[in-house]
Image (cartoon, rainbow, N blue to C red; front, side, top):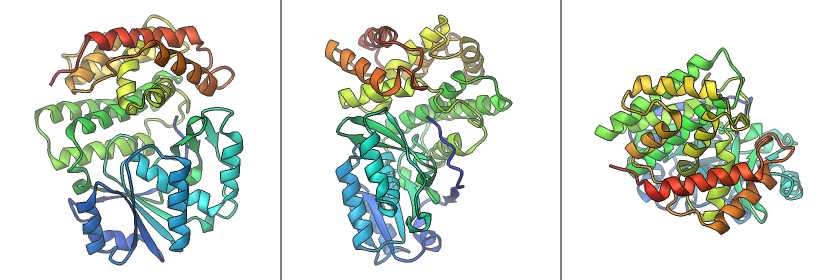
Length: 394
């Protein structure tokens, strides 16, 4: 989903490798660093620069759990931190965001535990004392989630993966440094670019006409053209542009006034990823083609057929080689970018994913309202057939 965080995130673009020289000017009071344990080189540069002497907590880049939040929360409290700098992918940044607000207002933890069973979405009440929340400076090392500026975060609980929304989750400062993106495997750059593209495309297809439709089409074209350039050569500048475009999907005009639950593919992909343990974009690559085929065939509960075709026409204007039909066209783009879907979706996976999708997002809930178990199973069956026959190229 998309969420209006209300509180504006300050976005800073640093020259390649210069974040260690400037981050100190953005902090306040006692500062700590939470970092992906695999980013040792970037960690050391920060600690040699403005963050010298700061407390450090290393995390493994994996889905955020309640135990993760306890660990980060304890780190914040024991060091009496007034600023938390987060460096890593979406899961590390989500851990920092969630721990910061749960530490500031412990009552939110009780609220989350009580409401986690009700649906896949938890909208947190306002923080009792906003000034108690430590300042967050978020520096992504990946592309696609836009976690550094978004007002949502994912949390794995005993009853499944939950999407947490709060205006206080958006980072106070989002800092992009091309050097932090240099070690990201190229296939993950493409996955992130696809994630950002589908955030805009899915939300537009699931929303009514808007005066900002042109902004959405232009942003999608920019991402597609960038992806095509990345297939030819890879530079720090292109990676930084990918991260900026990902950020723009949350902060720009493209999603202004849209249905916040319009990107319905996300909810199914989220459950498929949780059930299989696969990356979210691996699951997304499996289901997006079948969902778009359903929309093209008139299944309005998934999205608007006319708006999908208009959007895809903007894509094929940028890349004429793609199939003009949205469903085979998006699968073609996924293959061009070397993104793989799930190799197998067995019967148990199909059953568990369908059950979780309906329980967490369907029925009277707005996310998958109007979509029943049979429709979800049809999409998953189609995904299983498609990805058992097709493998990405390149």
